[in-house]
Amino acid sequence: MPSAPWWRSAVVYQIYPLSFADGSGDGVGDLRGVRARLDHLAWLGVDAVWLSPIFRSPMADFGYDVADYCDVDPLFGSLADLDAIVADAHARGIRVLLDWVPNHTSDRHPWFVESRASRSSPRRGWYVWRDPAPDGGPPNNWTAAFGGPSPAWTLDRATGQYYLHTFLPAQPDLDWRNPDVVAAMHATLRFWLDRGIDGFRVDVVHGLGKDPALPDDPPELVPIPHAALNDHESTHAILRALRRVVDAYPGERVLVGEVYLLVGKTHASYYGRGDELHLVFELPAAVLTPWDAAEWRARIAHVAATLEPIGAWPTWVLSNHDTPRHRTRFGSEARARAAAVLLLALRGTPFLYAGEELGLEDAVVPLARAVDPGGRDGCRAPIPWTPAPGHGWPAEPWLPFAPEPARRNVETLRADPSSILHLYRRLLAARRASPALRAGDQTLRPAPDGVVAWERTAGTDRRTVLVNFTDRAVACAAAGTVEVASDGEGEGRPYAGTLAPDQAVVLR
Image (cartoon, rainbow, N blue to C red; front, side):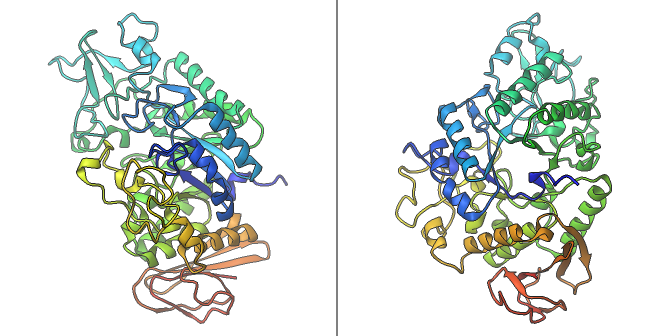
């Protein structure tokens, strides 16, 4: 029987390059900074790293407005710097994923500059252009994701037509019905695959296929950005073609999709029949699910019920560059520690967001320093590396640090075996050592109110996981030795039958 692909048992670590580490001394994170800190990732024990966008960009949306898909923005460094990261990461057994943004480009991309030059431009059909409505307004009632509710259309007065942008006006949507767009975008994937990139996180993948009639959204849904409503059948043929591009390369290259729909089909459909995305983020866990046992039990059961029948593999995430950090959402370090056990012991591929291993909260960003059009600056604060002034950054970083950087930094927490950083390292080591935790089956077990319990099994290897979501001690029957405890208590000893408040354990 063939072995499971690497990404089914991997732990992936997301780096937001602007905020990870500064190698040039200008206060902005860059690729040389990432390369200099790869040993931290190897020590932690992750299997892959995902770099948020590093392509050339005017930075209207901090890299999610791409002006050249086949080059590195000078803000981050050069192609040679990225090649060096790939080589050094691979030497450490760490794979590298890039953030690929196929729904839209920058309005400064040469493709769009040519497209808007005239109605007869050869690239006019590369983007979504429409005549005004009879009243002269936008072609339909779709709203944009930022600055809303505002129209997802901007009038180009020179040519008298509107162009579609489901995000900022500086991010015009590509028209994936155009075969020239498909060929050009496939070529950008091959450019990076040829350079040894191991896969891609695909941004707003559910936006690619659009109803060619561009019908109005239902009036009651208009306050919701169209980006969270778009779910057209044509997307799936696009994804199957992307999958063929990636699967033509050796080494089990992977496509990980961002699918966040507030109305419409579940994201399970984006796995196709095993021929579309390899992985799809379980974003409701990072956006909608509070620190509540009943909610989490229902979420875990829902994921199993929708994905297991189609043979799809879950992808769990608690924090990322778009949402408040889970330490901030859940309210305490004890809960953040228990959440680490939850994330890393569930069946599926977990994604960590840089800084969660430090227990970081969101930064408090004064209005004068706010820069993100989507209000997400707080979760993008710089990573503190040392307790010294500057915290390992040679110049004042582009955003303020999260609270307590003199204590919550890599150097200080690495020196403390009881820290949350060491908890993450123990959890990752436990996963590597256990076939059950890496890729085993999962069964929810009965548990007292306020506790979620499940069992992971692979052959004779078995682990039981208990998570207490309450602020009180709870008696919970289970047998085994405590392999990992979120608070470190009782590790290496038989489980005593009671969970401390906000405690999670893995029993062997």
